[in-house]
Length: 176
Image (cartoon, rainbow, N blue to C red; front, side, top):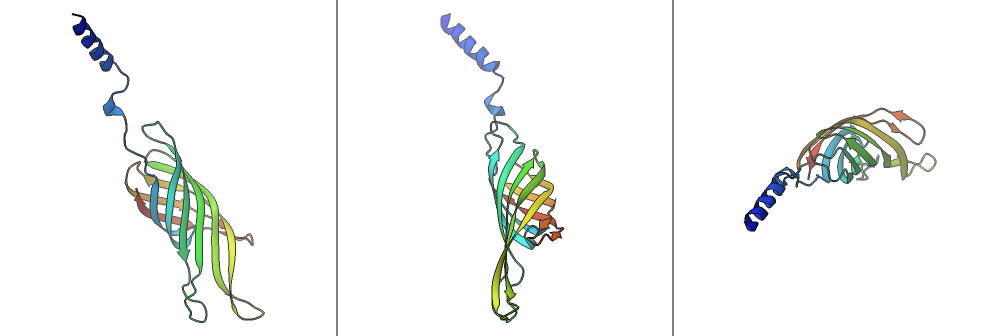
């Protein structure tokens, strides 16, 4: 009789738990993203890697995520003498996005440009590195599991000489 009561109590205890094992989300949050961006903070086009550094933990559907993005782009591959000497552009930013699958995204960072120029006094080739501030606000489609991502955003760039460039970015990639 005592065994039957103990078994009945265990069954009742397990039956009235507020969470069952089938409802716990064991799927990990996607932390790595690779995407191509056209007309964004990297200029006419860039290849980007983003690592999610923070997401709401212990939630079935994380809503707030923060990631660090690093990209690479080029504008000209050859200098004015025809030698292979590419202009390099590196967009670096911190992006926060909020939502379950459809996200509002906001980001802030720097675009590092290393371009080939002609020295006006000696007429020789020289490289010039500049920093430009960038800002991003837009839409991001991304699930919490592996799969495609899509971004559409407004990405103004403010140059060191206080020139304000309006850019709209379109990104397609994959999260893993």
